[in-house]
Image (cartoon, rainbow, N blue to C red; front, side):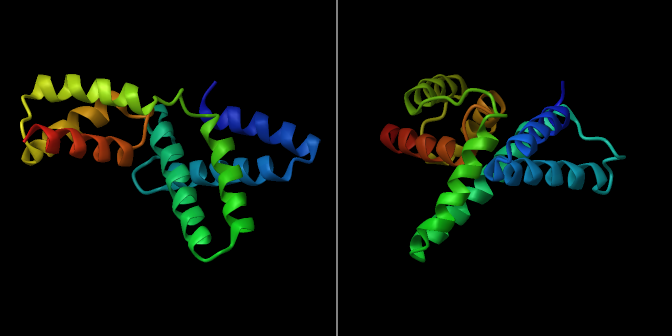
Length: 152
């Protein structure tokens, strides 16, 4: 079952349960899928390899909004964004812990022969391929920079 079918099934369940938070989140995913399907060059299809990227993008948007709402002292709006994040994350693969990401980055750094922050591009390219979907790019970047700075 692809993402669109899962979302539609969950949306029906949420509508029957009158779960406003789930309905709002699932409708956002559905809208993003429709936009991706109708985008120029998509040919009316939404490929499975793009599902994780789409979900991560939706989560990143909500995290950014939540931070802004927190800064503007609007906790009720930040709370809504965080609720949506929790629902969207259900469709992603199990996320890696920070320690697991560090272990994988250590392997990648050794494999690529990276020795300083100047080699960040090589490490990031390899890490995003290997860890994509299991953690976000911001976490990978932050940890990779720390680890490379410690090497030099």
